[in-house]
Image (cartoon, rainbow, N blue to C red):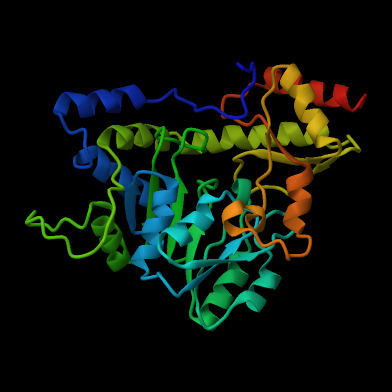
Length: 352
């Protein structure tokens, strides 16, 4: 089905085509070349970190980060219940065990529950800045220092939130705040970790290209075509974040008096505008009929077939999964178009 208003779409009004053409003209289209180095350097600068390591996806970024930290079989990693499954999969990919912690009322990991899930095998925690809403990183970092844990921030949905952990991992998928179509990037202040991630993403090929590979590694490289695309997006990040902040304000103003909707807490940066909705599934179907694409919330990790824990009591994440909905959120969503979406939501609830 073709929607008049998509849940998300990329904002492609910068120099994307120019940088891609530059890569083609120079023949530097693989993982090597000046556009790649420039994107890594400038993204690290944007996040106020020392090193950027671009890769093939946000999931690959998380996997590289955990591997670089030496996390593997026998280890446990604290992961939020409320997240996209890629967060948990990255832990499983490296052979470790994800240990799930329920979410607080803002959808981010409930820091008051983390300590009770820490065991002698716990090596790391992966907080997720859900929908652009910052986790309580001060509390998480205090726990990490107390228990000697590493912190890998899942910032897939949070371009613009400053990292404080050991490594932060961003997605550049087509629906993210900035995009390369597909891709990801890790940032860190630790030169050793950055070097380890570079080695692992490139099949552990040594500088001498002797084709002796010293460890099991990955083909997680980003192409220079993608790097050029992402660089063009990054050049407009301040404008993009400002435009998305305006979208958040318009939704807040237009929806706040609908008694059947619960607006979610403010976001540090807007990825998706999320609400809790009475008769969520009916609203979803109604908006679909009006040409408006929406998306429901993530299912809790403990309810996923791979990680099913049927003996778990009801989770806060279950409540959100049952009635949560994300409205169309993309950078060039016009005020007029947003008014149409708001009016249709109000019509469904007969709200004025």
